[in-house]
Structure formats: C-alpha cells, structure tokens
Image 1 (cartoon, rainbow, N blue to C red):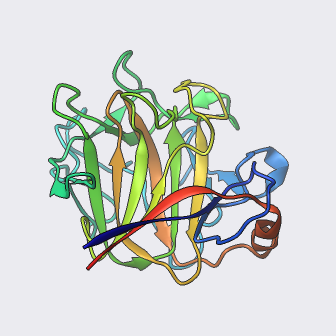
Image 2: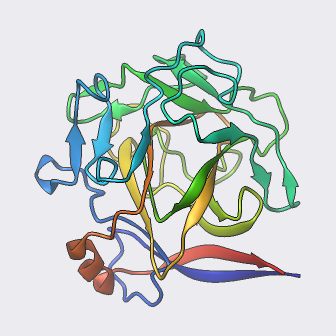
Image 3: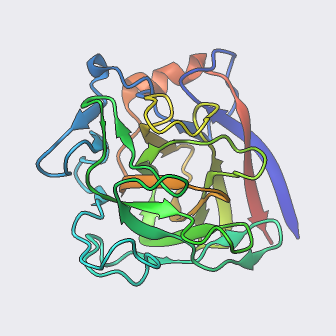
Length: 267
C-alpha cells in the first residue's frame, strides 16, 4: 500500500507562517557576497565554480568531477574514470509514478554546447564554470523521465550542489531532485524543484546557484535521483554531509512559509 503525504517545504523567499519544516533549502539563497554562506575557491574546486561552506564542513564529501579522465563528453556517469568519490554508485533513477527503475541518462561534460548543456554560471566571477560537471540528460531522444541516480552508501541530512540554468518543474522540462532512503526506489523522502521559478537562463544568478538542502525532524537520505526531461540539468560540486542546520537559518524557519512536498511511504 502507498500513501502520499503533503508536508512543508520552507525556502528563503516565502513569508507566510510555517507548520512542519520537514525539508527546507537553506537560508543562503540570495547569494550576495555579504551572505558568508557561499565561497569561491579557484584553486581547489576549479575556475568559476561555486562551493558552500557547508559542503566543506568536516565529514562532508564532495564530488567535483574535476579529475575525470574519460574522454568528454562521456556516454554515462557510472562508467567514467577518475571520480573523486569512488564509493558512490551512479546509475539509473526511479520513475516514482509507475514504480519502475529507469535507465541512466546523463554524462560528464565541460564547456557549453548550444541546445545541449551550459556550464553553470558564477556571479562571483561573472563567468561560467570552466571545470567538468554533470549534465542530464545525455540522450534526449529516450523516453522520459530522463534521470541519473546516485547511491551515497551512508545516511545524510545535507545535500549541496552548484545548480546551473534551473528550469521550472513545468511542461516537458520536469526538472527536479528526488531524495530516497533505503536506496533508489525505497522511501521517497523529499522532492526538490528549482528554488526560483526557473527559466533556464545560462547566466542569471537567480537560476545559477549553489543550493543548500537540509532535512530536519530526523529525516535522512542515502540516495538521490536527478531528472530533466529536456536539456539540461547541470550540476557541479555535489556534496553530502551531516552538518547541522545553521542556527540563524533554523530561527528563520519560524517566519518562513510552506509549500507542497511529497513524503511517500511504502508498506
């Protein structure tokens, strides 16, 4: 038996009263230089790429894709050589509507190709990411949903990523992140869509951000599925960790509003 429950999503731009904060995207979402929640490290993480202080906290793991040695663009992610996190398992995703596994449909790329993928933009350097990153889908001719999944091998409550050219979860785009516990296709803990009504702009700081996602109320995830049914979901500096919710952000939750998020349990 399956149940679909609507719970609260809280983000930095909503001001109505909150009820249950089972998921929220962290308070460092405006990405002004004075925020202090976003950093740029041109040596460790590569030119024009963004990384969050939470991604660099003790115990966090980061996949930069910078050390991939496979010829680019790759035909998939699971088959490339040189990933930073060798313990992570990349592969297909999960069609949560039909409850079936999906084939892997993503690649490692570098640079930008019109009509295919665009390197994530960094407002701090006013330029696009020069490093390697992941783009979904690899094959737009395949049947949707077009997804890539990754199993992290442990339980986490923080996910971070440099999310490029965000698109709204509408029409054929259907760009989102699903977080699972119990492996891909297990319990769907959270569904994250663009923090802003994304329009896919390649160079707009509102649609190219380092997004910090925290699970609260004891929820954790061990897997993620990234989906875009068109070109393209670009991501770099993918991080997981167990860092606590920043105190200032946690206090701010009381003044933030709620939107729909699905929590699905299988029995």
